[in-house]
Image (cartoon, rainbow, N blue to C red; front, side, top):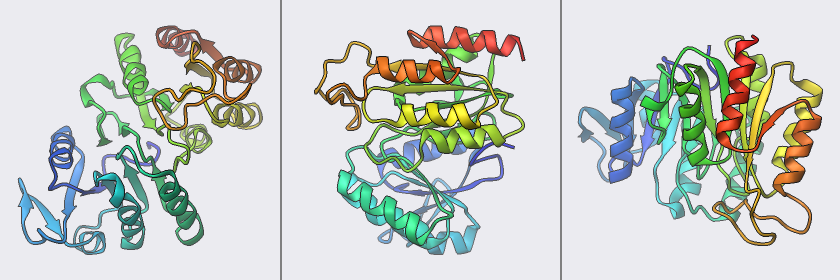
Amino acid sequence: MSIFVNSETKVIYQGLTGSQGKYYGLLNRDYGTKVVAGTNPKKAGTDVEGIPIFASVAEAVEETGATASCIFIPAPGVRSAVLEAAQGGVDFIVAITEGVPAHDEALFYNQLRKDFPNVQLLGPNCPGIISPGECNIGITAGHIALPGGPVGIVSRSGTLTYQALHELKEKGIGCTTCVGIGGDPVPGTSFIDCLAAFEADPETKAVMMIGEIGGSAEEEAAEFISNNMTKPISAYIAGVTAPPGKKMGHAGAIVSGGKGTAKAKMEALEEAGVKVGNNPTEAGDLMAEIVSQL
């Protein structure tokens, strides 16, 4: 069992007829992901290299039995695409798109919680999710991920998601599921969502967590770890040298006053029993030590 997705997950690509959606949709199909449909109301009835295009998510779900959707829609259309996916009947939505307005994120996040509480949103502005050897939804390169567990990965940073996978693969350590939650101010999936899923997953024996400056998500995760996690964790927090008050990369990666600093996050995690590395490689080395003792 893997959290959120597995080899049986059927995925709709909203935006499959666009250049990015087509590239990653076909790449992930070649990886083994069951990409069963795309959507585009103007191109319904056509196909993209054998993948049928439907007018709406609801039609695609009815015809294919898909339970997940991946959104490669330009930022102004993401709000309607997310709601269309939820209304259409999928229970897992991965929104890759960067630059979604924060007020749109807040609106569809809260509408999902109110009207579709069983729908899990990942993103926006995230690399997606991969259960190596089973299912890859998003833009993560499948060849850098070693299947077979025992480590689950959750990361706020897209680039460091890939480095975490690579660091573990270089050490011969496999991954159950790697989740890139994204760094926007209103993420659909939190550290806590993933930590809880990893804690409940019998195949995940340890967790690697990658955070960054800004907000309080890592401190909240540290509190959750203290009270709820029994599995060992290694972590890295990006942005140690970031100047206060300056946005660094993600819209959510901004330090205000004394809050949201890498130092404060690292201290909170260490107090919760997490082994914190000073760089991604050190976090990988710490995880290798953990795995050797499992």
